[in-house]
Image 1 (cartoon, rainbow, N blue to C red):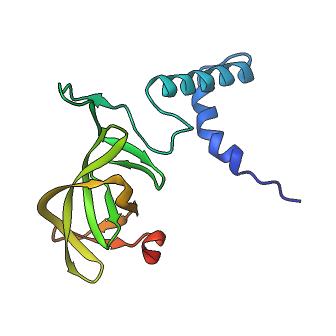
Image 2 (cartoon, rainbow, N blue to C red):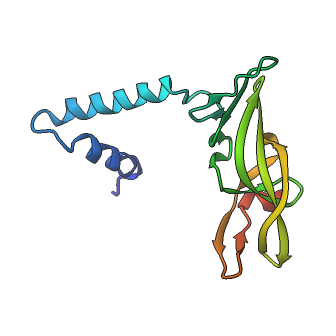
Length: 160
């Protein structure tokens, strides 16, 4: 019988990092390190129970509204960061530049990508704000020689 090893494979890197300088009591030291890391994530604003949140947000300090910004966000489709390509509902591709939160609503500042041919795109010049609810998924891509890139549509994009 083959036992599933995905859980131990996921934690292997964390275990190695926590046990790097341990000379005695590996289990206690590893448990303490992992617990400490999770507490630091909670203090920094990461949460396992929120579906969407900014990672390490900073306040813009506006008088009329509480606006936070970040270079990374966690959405239902996963974590996105600056310079990532995303597929927007409706069939467009955009490159993320910054993420904002205003009254619990998340917005992405992005550069719309121009379609060249087939699955080849290039960065455009128009900057826009898009509600993060419109983001379907991140896009895998490969740079080409002429400052363009070939994308591979995400699985979810085929059904929207």
